[in-house]
Length: 164
Image (cartoon, rainbow, N blue to C red; front, side, top):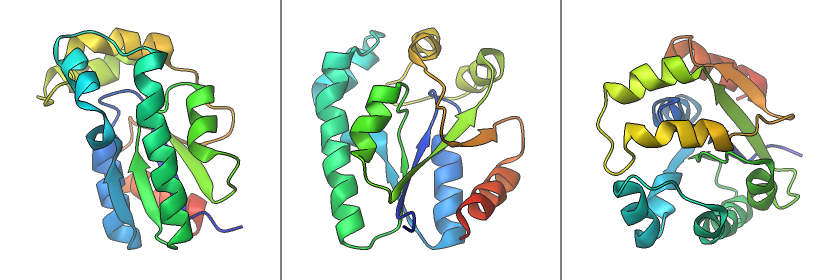
């Protein structure tokens, strides 16, 4: 089965948007930003500096899982930037569909922290980064990409791993 949707996962500040957009442009795929699917209550909670819990995340993940199914049905190759921090979240997103693959942007808390400190995100303050690392369950089955490498190299590695 050919991969039609790649969930580009990792903590906030790992480079999901940068790598996702670059990959989409290079491979001719569609890029989707998972953050834009958050319900307003989640956005407000994060804006206040409060970490999300599973109850906050399930409706968001369900909306993304539904969209993934639609993208597959439409034969619309898509790369989705989505933290997908826990295995149960990844299972919910993939829903047993072999057309879904995961790519993990892996980096240390120190490296990611330095990136997050130098950027402004609409609603994700740097104070939430430790909660993201605490929640993160590294995937057993994913294309692993070391965020210490330049974006162009990561995009090339991802394209090679997927054969696109």
